[in-house]
Length: 356
Image 1 (cartoon, rainbow, N blue to C red):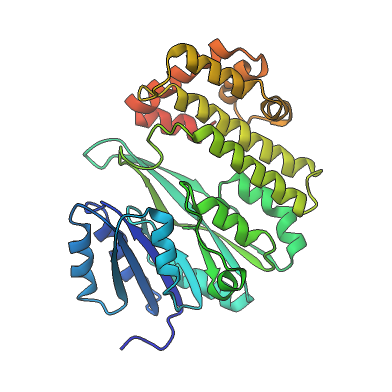
Image 2 (image 1 turned 180 degrees about the vertical axis):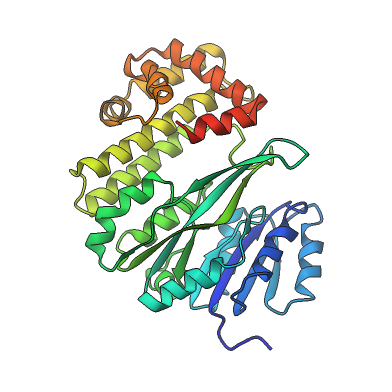
């Protein structure tokens, strides 16, 4: 029988992932920590995702499947959160997978040190074709304990710099704290970032595990990271505002190391926005694209960021030249090259992104 209270509630939204969801679920079933509940929300899938989930749930009492109309990942996660009973909450994407010791190691550290949050390393696995060939990029920081707000906040820039504080799936959250804060996912794309920011804003005790467990998969052409998004620039501007607000709240908006990471993050994502405008699916004319790029790179935010950021590679320094010189035509040509590489040579694009 199901224990009275599972240690971990695993939340998994699933939409049209019939080629991946079995691996994701089985990676949870194979965890060395056995006391968990897996809450999977089939978000109106039109493929075999629902049937696969029902079959898996029929053989494992720890799995609960909820079939809902398509409402997006935020609504699906919230549907599961409303039903979660675990001491801790872990968020899993249905097209990724995790290594067996992940939950046990995270729960062990959290319970031993009475933590509100555990942050672990993760892999970015980029697949190139049908033969399973892929590269793995590791994101991690050394093992650490931050028993006070002050210690965590002072070190947070290092975690942000390794992309460890943006997504929910390399973290173990305390459910009691989620409920006390009334946290739920916002109904927007890239909904995970504001959830994490809200959680860490006044978090007290944080632990870091250097070992990577989670495998974030870059493969599906229809995934969230591969589409043209007409509202991407406005979203990035909003996110940058959240970061600036967070550091003001922390009283660290004058800290040089913290602000360099915040500004470098902004300018790197601005390059992504330029590439997005150059996507062939973009409905703007070339003249309109250049005009939009000019608006992006000549803004006060962009010029401040390009002044404060310290790129870590010669390639990134070169990519920032059009922004620094406010040359929209050159930025447009640069964006076209990046877009071409992204669409036609995933291997090279992944290498360049990892070494930017």
